[in-house]
Image (cartoon, rainbow over all chains, first blue to last red; front, side):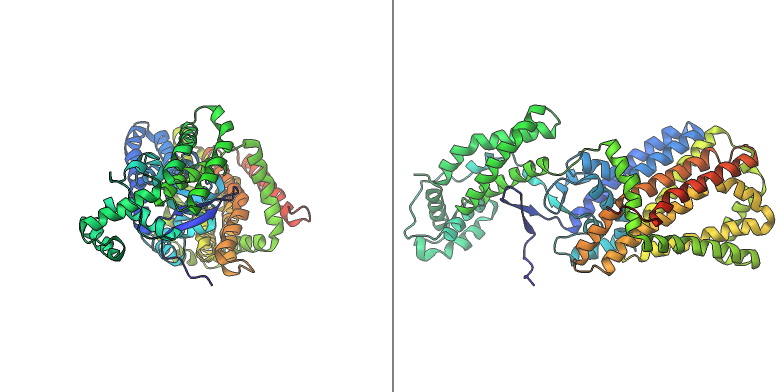
Length: 235
Length: 319
């Protein structure tokens, strides 16, 4: 048996022969998005119910129909026609896709949403929660039967390619020794991600390369970033 | 090639794919759909290159996201062709049940068996009904059928109210019976047996107190669709449950997935049958039509359901 991966990134290969990564979502954020969807449904049902109540019995009948649709098919229609997202999922940047990353079809979406009833049992999504913990791909029972995963769709949000220029404005410097490709990649990643960390953390990491940079503290950080810029092709 | 040169050389291509995807997401420009595959494939290639050359997480993430969006747009099917779908459900259901004859018959027996047994038992020991259903439930059932309300007809507005109520209630029962299959079939088993026993007790009670004719005049019309629908929902759930319990050479997850997919035509037909049942129950069963017509129509509907699903027990195509 393979050792389970330690992060939540899953690679899947497309027919074009390229690997794409799916970032799996965990229970808390999915629960939150379900809660939002439930609130939205209630927020729609209450006013609709009070308007329909004016029409007496016939109104009640229509209300039951709307409630039925809301209970079972609101998520299905949203997922199929709205890129795998219900309003709740959209709010949290989540999205449902088939195991291979393709868009969900009617069958997949219907199965996963009908089986939510089983996930909810015995109370408060306990079975679903256990299933998410037990499966490598964070699948609740409905996802297992439907062949779907819930992933982060955040890439739509970050306006593509704009953040590439966000590297610090330093003069590039050639690293003092030859670096293997993995080492180059590590330096580039350090430079890209450093702005997201506190200064202490940046220094802590950069200090470990003191034998290479010959510097400690903020100067070491800057030096590493200069190397990264050089590796990226700035001259 | 250094990363900056790589970006400069391909930026236009990426922007184009992003533009096409935005157009398609917004449901605009049919021309975009034609350009998408070629542009998408070229971006796939740049992602591969960026990965193998180690251009950094940020660029790879960016391209990964683009490719994923393109893949999502290009593959996966969301079109619903009504005629094709009808064929998938109506023909598919017979093929599936035929392939799975044993489980189909077992599911029906698991529902109709307890139903008929309980109904019969209540005729012999009437107090049994009180052990199964609460006194209030039995009383309301008595009121409804002994008072003759269901024979004189309701106002049409309350017909609509009842339709909505039956849909939400009865179709909901069917869906839950299916969903219960995900618990190794136990949930479906429970709903089949429970509904069989409970409905058997309620109806048996009305018959035991001497209002059987009134009840069946009301119940015969929608009974065929409703009761059989619950049995079919049970089949769908048990199918999924059996996949989990005995996956054969597949993983349990894979078996569960395949079983659910196979069961889907049956799920749709179950949904249709329960909806038809709700329709009949609301707009026909309680009208003031003469008793004889109700029995004639109701009887024909039973024959129709039996003739339709019975084909699954005859030899024939299975795929």
